[in-house]
Length: 358
Image (cartoon, rainbow, N blue to C red; front, side, top):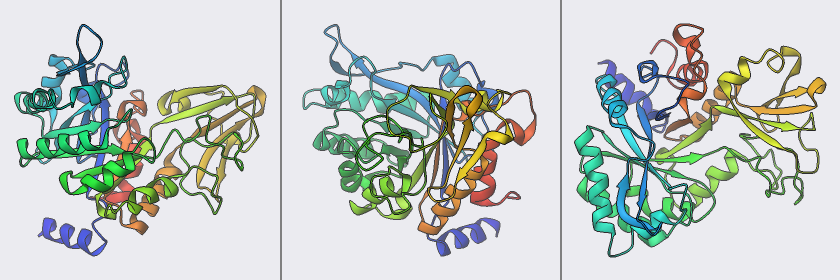
């Protein structure tokens, strides 16, 4: 009866909240497999394998374990509770940004797909996540997903997406072949965006809305481009960062110029008594973004905290999107606390998406 009621509520609400997907980075030194918050997530994605490189440094049609190690793979799969799904991610090879395209050429795609299928099935994963972001070939991506879907019937297939490098086109042409399209709504503060009327300025890592300003990079703009390509809202997951960005030499957003950037995990930000001070905490109600303004250090910190999680879920429900994706779960882990406090962002997302008592 409870499952029937839940399905009825999801259907009535446009099927939003079908999934809460979180990445777990292999061999990270912050959070062990035993601390993965399985109770908060429907899917955990193990990050990551990658296209292998041959002796010539080119993609050779094989899959490398890359960051993954067998003992951790076995431990993660063994820790998976009933009803939850563990996926393996295949990401770009950092040493050759064209390795995906090279490995999916007509002469190599067969062996590459076979390796992906073997990686999934031999290790007991419930599916695969494709995180191909660089030098994307639209036709090769389509052929890859066609073969994967045929070779992995009943398995979950997810892809990451964005509004760059033809990823929006890939999403629009392949949404029927995949179960989730998780849009990466972060790294919007990187130089080159021209966020202040065509000129670079200090901006947020992950703002929710443009607030009527077409120059601003924000989640609503990024996701809208995926929807415009024909992807149904209930196939879209909104991807959120569990890391913050420190801008040095400036204390407020929208200041013109490029300033040095440093990335810091949410866990480390909240553990820093100098930065994590209520006096520095600000909120941009128009763009829906949290930040710290730290005059003593001359720093501006763009972060996504509990308020941001709640605001994102409210927007997700309003638009009827399929779910949420978090990158990455170990970045919030606070082992010096207990219970839900160890995973403050995941717990806030879960409570907002499903209700704290579910």
